[in-house]
Every structure is written in structure tokens, then in C-alpha cells.
Length: 606
Image (cartoon, rainbow, N blue to C red; front, side, top):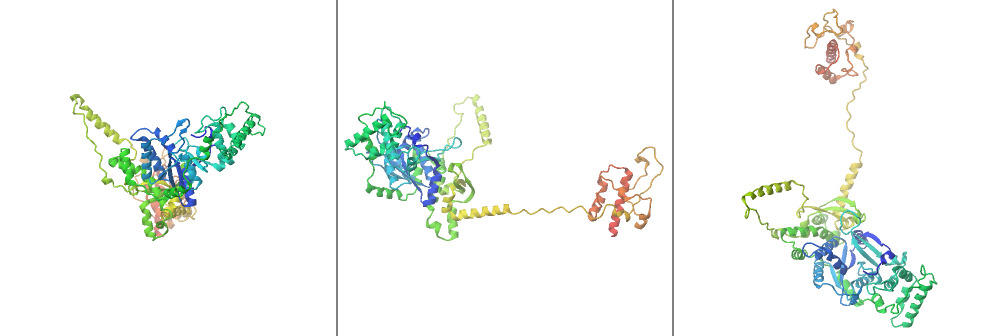
């Protein structure tokens, strides 16, 4: 639609998230982003939908549900009876009357405004934008710029090559930026490009003239000069045409990259009737604009009951399962729309804190997380928990249950076919064990992402409580952690061997006759009692007995501690000695036992 190849000349535009565009506008103006939508393009696009009942209107339904979940107030503009009779050499009409009627019905059920233009919808949209009734126009037709629209949005689609195909971004064309940019094309210049290169009303244009030559002529100012000429002023029109032809053939003023001597301009160029389609399109009168504005700004609520009946009739979403599907599709968008309308109301600004807190819990149960996602161009969002059926307000008990008819194979089966029942039962059991996707339950909490600024303006207490909890978590994480209790040091001030000058131990001496082997045989030694040896003399006497071995010799390296144990630790060490493994000589083991018992006795005396 529009001028072929024009987008390469005016540039790719600015790609931005529609959610970000609407949210930032809402933060600045405290009102939703008002958007005029040329519905004729949507009616053409949805015809590609397939499957199910009424796929085209179902695609429109999903688009409307997505618009509902944003800070946008749309007005859908339909073509009127006074549009040009021919467009691109085809007779133009108002489209399918049944599809248009169904489209208007579902749009109004969503609470959106509709408007029938006197002529073409894109021209009426441009008029609404020029007079400030809307902030921008959503259309795939570049003609909106030629009709004087200051801000045009197009190509509402998914961003990136991976992930969901859900439309998230739009391309913005600002008329002022386009004129000041590399293309240098203003409204009048684009009209000349449409006349020379071909447009909706004159597809052939000037034979042999491409879009680049037409843009060069437009940048030279020929478009502005042409639009100033009246239709009745034939002399001025002839002079303008002669000057354009002279520059094309001689390039005297260096407007073009090269001369175009072979380019012939027809005698019928420019077609003044086609020119007036662009410069003076059929639009609403000035006195009707205020009425249109009031109609657009009138507060309308979503007709949930009407939508439920519509989807049941049109999409066969019947019975309880159809109601659950309807709730799943519309609940999240309906919640955001109600939050947007709640911003700035008396419920938010006034009232008791406890009452306000209870009112906020009706919308959102809790806030769980924060993110900045690429789908919204890093617009801060909060993830909230809500009950879908509470938001939509449908009573599922009033919905009829789904009728499931039983079936079997026995009616016309032979005896040899009885095994089918067993196989079917086995397959059903296997399917139950497979991991299945979590089903939607409208009675349990669901999670959605909501722009943080909208949630803060609509539910300030809920957001404040969540932030307090987050700060408490951050402070707890940043606080120095308490040190763990250190184990009691095993070191002592007592030097190694300090007890040697106070205590000496003795042992039972067996036969002193040396044996032939290097190591004494256990069988040659007298039996030893398992009871601990007793002291045979006072401690002082033991210290004077030179026959007793030194205590330092009685501490094998693999058993004795590096330093003398003390207190209860020494008692435990001595009592558990019999249960330890010992790799030394048997005589050394006995010496060590004697040493320990003497040491324990000394401790008891103290």
C-alpha cells in the first residue's frame, strides 16, 4: 500500500516496544496512549488465519485482547462511503459487510471506540492526529504521512528471530524527523513522489521515473511549489511543468545526480484530481471533531458477559471448558486494564490504610519478582500473583459440564478383537505417567508481568510493602555474618616432658634371660592381668627408682599426643587406650598403660 519503495528512502524508522511507548506516555501525562487504528489493514491481514471456527475474527479477538493489556486507548476507524472509486486500478469498496459488522461488535464488547470515516480511514486517522484527538496512528499505509500525520506506527510484530511470535514492537515514523533526515521528504514532497513514481490512485506515474528520481525532484522543492498551485491556474501549472522538464534534461541547478534526457513527461501530468485526493481528502468537518473527541473519550467498560456469549457463538468456546479458555485468554489483559483505570482515582489517593490494603488485595495477592526484559525494551516490570476467575468475574458453576460420551469396541467386534481393550488400557496408563504440561486452573493463583510504574500508581501499598521486604533482604545479605565458635585449642603452656621430674612408672619384670630372637615371643612372657597395675610405692619413691623407664620413651609417636593432655581429656585418652590399635612392641604397650594409670592417679591426688 502507498508508494512503492518509499521506505528505503525515508529510512527504517525507529523500532520501539509498544509497551514502552505507552508506559512512558502514561508516566508523563497520567493518561493512556491514544491510538487511531486503520482497521482496513487489519481486516485484510486476518484473512490469512486458518483453522477453527471463524479464524479471521478470532485473530482480531486475540489482537484486541493484547491491546487491552496495555496503557492504550484505541479508536478503530473504518472506511466510509466517499472514498475514491478506484484504487490501484481496482474498484474500491467498503469491504465485506458481515465481517465489518462482526468486527465492530467485538471491538465494542472490549470497550473500545469505533468511528466511520466519511472517506478513507487513513486520511481520517491523520486528521485526528493533527487535531490532538489521538497521539499517533497505527497503519501499514504510508499515505498517512502524505495526509499530514505527524506520528505513524506500522509493522506491529515480534522482535528478533527467536522466541515467541507475539507482537511486541512497532516502527515509528515521525514526520518532522523524516523531513529533517537524509531523505528530506516532507508531506508535499511525498505527494510529488506518489505522482511521479506511482501511488494508490495513480499506479503508473511518469513512465520511466523511479522513486530515486522522484525523491530528488521532491527535495528540490517541486512538491511544495505544485501543492500551492490552484486547480484553475493553468498558466502556473504549465510553468511549473516546464521548469521541472528543463531541470530533468539539463540538470542546470544540480538537483539530480545526472541528466534524464530520455524521460518524457505525459501531457496529463500532473493529474490534478489525483493531487486533490492527497491534498484535500474527504474527512470529517471541523464542527464534528469535538463530537468525535467526546465519543472517543467516553468511559466504557469491558462487557465480560457479552464477550463470553460472543466467543461461545463465534468460536465454539462452549460449556465449562470453553469458559476456562476464555478466562485464560482475557484475565491478564483485563487485570492490567483495570489497574490503568484505577490510577489517580479516589480509591488510591484517599481512605484508611487498612481499607486501602484490603482493596488492593482484590486485584493482586502479592509481588514476587522484578525484571527488565528485551520484549519491553527493558521497561521495569513486576511479576504479580492474581486469581484469574476473580478478575474476570465469571461463575463457573453456572457453566454446563462437558458431556463425554462413552465408547467401546464390543458392539461389532469379533472374539479375536477382545485384546484391544487391554492394549487401550495399557496405553492410557503409560500416558498418565508421561510428563504433561501444567494445565490452567482459573481458581488458583497465576503470574503475569505488569509495568512497575503502572502498578506503583494503582497499588502503592502493595509495591511499598514488597520494596520494604526487598530492602530487608538486601540488608540481611550485606550484614557481616556471625563467626562460628572456634574449637578449643589443643595447645597448652606445659612444655613437653614437664611431668618427667614428678612421676616415674614401673612395670612387672618377667624373665631377664635374653631370647634367641630379636623380638620377644609373646608365648614366652608370663600372663599379664587385664586389671590396671597398682602403685607399689609413693610417687616420690617412684621418682627415685632408676630402674623405671623414662616417660618420654613411653610415648609412641603414633599414639601419644604431641603435648601432655590435661583434665578430662587426659582421662578419656587413658581410658580409651585399650581400644586403640598399637603397632609397637608388646612391652612398650604395657609400659604405656602403666604410664597412663600413674598419670591418672597423679591427677586425682591433685
